[in-house]
Amino acid sequence: MHHAPLGFFDSGVGGLTVVRAVQQLLPAENILYLGDTARLPYGSKSPQTIRQFSHEDVRFLISQGVKAIVIACNTATAHALPELQKTYQIPILGVIEPGVEAVLRDPSAQRIGIIATRGTIASHAYQHALALRKTGLIIHAQATPLLVPFIEENWIDHPATRAVLQTYLEPLVAKGIDTLMLACTHYPLLIPILQQVLPPEVRLVDSATTCAEHLRSNLQALHLLNPSDASGKLQLYLTDLSEEFEQLTRQFLEKPAGRIQRAVLGAQ
Amino acid sequence: MHHAPLGFFDSGVGGLTVVRAVQQLLPAENILYLGDTARLPYGSKSPQTIRQFSHEDVRFLISQGVKAIVIACNTATAHALPELQKTYQIPILGVIEPGVEAVLRDPSAQRIGIIATRGTIASHAYQHALALRKTGLIIHAQATPLLVPFIEENWIDHPATRAVLQTYLEPLVAKGIDTLMLACTHYPLLIPILQQVLPPEVRLVDSATTCAEHLRSNLQALHLLNPSDASGKLQLYLTDLSEEFEQLTRQFLEKPAGRIQRAVLGAQ
Image (spheres, rainbow over the protein chains, first blue to last red):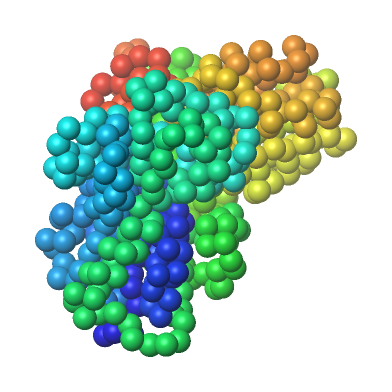
């Protein structure tokens, strides 16, 4: 069981930012990643549909013999995590708790901006988890649905991307945020341009690193860490294959991805 | 059979631009529209996946008793029309032939720009159909994948939309196009801003009106026109329901859409 892979899923390839962080912290772990590229994005779809897709993603990963599952997608975590944890016996982790932890690591964080897909923002999952953990926080949430398309087109440093970011971020900056939570696994790729657009005192937080730490302590507690000295393997499954997705995969992993296989989901 | 509805399908609600044109030309026809909002967009996905989804869309419409089907989506027409026509006995029409006809209505059209999703451009369906119909045309095709997200966000008149359009259109304008084919059923909503961004001599062409005419002559030939004097009804089915989709539906139809039902596709 220790050698069984960890299962990750996301609507697309954005969740690979979490995989990269896990590979750095837990290099022995084998990883099986499922990106539901045939039905992406999840962020603009209804809670009901996101839950249905998430069930199918989890069932695919379980059928592949994974030992634990990470939902490497904020929207799916926001809408489906509690239900999935109740339905399946396998350990399932999301990215929201680690994100909240990452925000609160700086005790001076007081005025928190959150940017995410429309689905994640509408779920109020971050707002709720932050308010539960610390009273008196001032939270400003902003849905930023156009960012994923720009990232997927690799138009990171383009005047249009800046114009979009300025429109989205101006209201948050005007409210004096000290922290900006990047509550979508795609957004770490925007960090260089966000640093240019935002005032220097705003701290940028993403959940990839804390998610990896969270995963390590969970696996430790469950005696599921892989004790091997060898480097783990990465297996990639996408529900739709195309040249663009392969290119994007390289970009998110910052290295070649190897052979990508096509996954056919049960109810698809 | 004459009173049976016409079936339309699209990846989302963009195809309603075609429905509007058909309602104007053939007001007696009952219309059943299916938008596969749970899996949109199609434009960035692989030909194999687009064909699979299109088969499921067609089977849903047939199960609802439609008398003929219009693929109100350029990407699905480009990748799936011939296969669908071979597989099913019901008359099936696409938007590409009407689009090509609309371009060639002006006999002086010589340098044709085409903007569309990545899938439509990569299929070469428009380039091929134009070249077959008229020799000597100079065709410049440009994939414009960020336009649909902007339209779906209703950011039509925004500096970022202009910046995106300028980047996409500059190479076409530099090549001296006299005609720009809007080869995606979402794009008619961009016509006001396109008229500002493009030189005034560039003619804008979309396939909605010619598609409606094409449909009328086909129904006439097949003796399938609805002879009723009453106004036809519009039934809307989406595979994912959300407030955003309902709002978008109103925007595309330019009137309230009535009750929208959720469609569950066979293999979904």
